[in-house]
Image 1 (cartoon, rainbow, N blue to C red):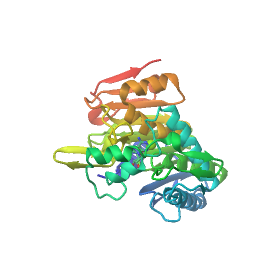
Image 2: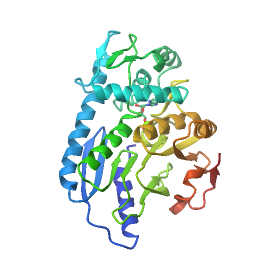
Image 3: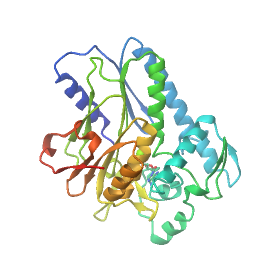
Image 4: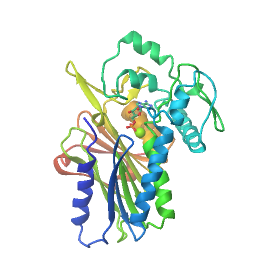
Length: 339
Ligand code: AMP
Ligand code: MG
């Protein structure tokens, strides 16, 4: 199963046009990037020119961060055989940020999970269920705290490999918000495979309305109103396969090396920074509701929507007025998580 970006974009369009006043015509474009489709909706005269800059910027970042592209920094790191490698400034800056977020989530996010992710076939799409002994051996190579980063100099212990898949799109979104503002775009919404990032408000000053996907494939579960925020969703439904009646997904619990089964089916983070939203959406999916609530209370700096296996939707209090259930989901239990 792949991400359903087209459906998400259509939802905005429907919602936008359902809201009375007709906004100025945006410049829209889409292109393939980072293994998914990227959709841009840019308002202001600079839109068309900025769209070309966006594509260049995304391709440059992909060139640094891809695990499969032989010219990337990550490829060099993952084939370094224990020797130090010099990273480009931006790769080092992202990795430093990501390592801090691994720490803040108690290792629920672990950017050294790549050997395990690959064993399950999530990199190539050649899915398989690894055996217990294989996973145990691979987990010995997973521990972000052994990644040594000193400025641009990275040393990975032999056999260890990095995967920035859980944070790269959020980082990219942040870079694009900066680029668009500098290029003179006043108002924009960018979607990159499950990540939505908004620059400013809609041109008429009202919030963007972003649809949140139902994890059971029934369309949209909710609608969120945002201004200048990243809305980032991690869900087991986004990339998964079935074998012998079991479903396995791409978000791995670093404690077990298996797809995280925490009772959550989807986590949406609302944050100022995409990189934080992206890291936390993955981490909270691993942590489950209790751990997620604890991190929200103790760390703060984000709001979230948690969807549980029994259909309950729980949202943190900062979203109480901006989130509502939608369509088939209006009758689902909605709980507010308070401080
Ligand atoms: P996301 O879609 O942002 O939740 O990121 C999921 C991707 O990050 C997966 O496709 C893997 O490449 C990688 N990944 C899976 N589990 C973890 C984890 N616990 N920590 C860090 N990266 C992970
Ligand atoms: Mg993520």
